[in-house]
Length: 439
Image (cartoon, rainbow, N blue to C red; front, side):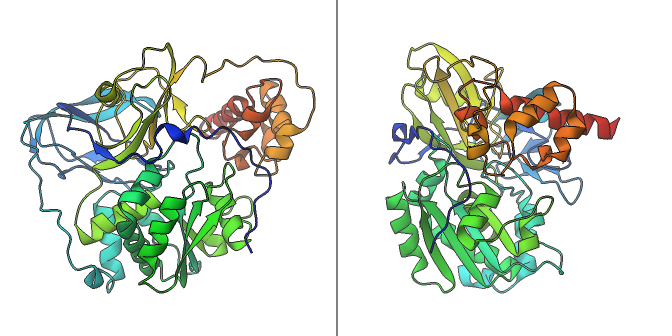
């Protein structure tokens, strides 16, 4: 019997804007900007210099540590500079800039090979994933080769492939499940093989019945695979909440999923793992939802990494309504952007162009101690108290009551009748703790 995690909210889905639309392929950009920081961990280091020629799939920057990832060019052309450029997460960061030669020449064939042969060697799977620069494509962008190589004393029993996609507006995972169900399932099998897990569960929310049917059909010929459909609730796709819903196991504070014998990977990541291992294709493109009422024709694009946001937006046009916000990701956990010059990175699941009606301004009123933020918090925290401590510059006290356990889902912000910027205070508190630690 399926269970549900504590808390959560039901914001308007707004997925109808892109639902059911086939993935389109955006043409390669004339100039691509490859951020050197595209994953959690250390930034990669360029292995090319100004004037070098590169092909599509060429590794242009190497990982600088275990928790880091390679970066590959998504176009063929010439490296014209390596310098700081607008970044969707960091504001500004170093990037390798490549100007297209118009040929789009690949560095390999990227053709499918024998899938069964790929299953025999765990080390080859790990090497292919690492070499291809794969990171978690659900948003966290944690290097995948690290998650597939847990310590020997923490064996993985269950792999969960996350197809929940609970963020409003976003349908990139949904569209990928419709177009590449077989690849996703085979990628799930490779992931399960890499960690020697006993079972693999593919979890999808019930608002995607067509995807559920296709994934189930793709699973029929394989053992130890099952599909679970969950009731729609945000943030169902969050790692710890999904683990609880699937296994009834709670990941304790300060620990990781592997501590309870579970590994979670996004459906997009599973697809990328398949392409890396079986097709020898690096991660140089991904599916991105382009939505919001500021967009003339919302859709899902297959976009080359390094493509400026403005290219993606110009491909479909603006609706003519006044644009209030440009967001990378979803409206709950995404980040507002200060320029459309930022490039698509590996963690870009969506680009939202929101109107004033969609992006209502906060009306900050005094907290009325209603307790709604406590009711919806999936981590069992008291967001109002966290906010109060941080605003009073008492970050140590905030830490004691769970500041670092906050997953920043935004449920408290969504539900607060006073319009208090609870999440923003929590993020500020985390930043202050980090600043103190590094001082």
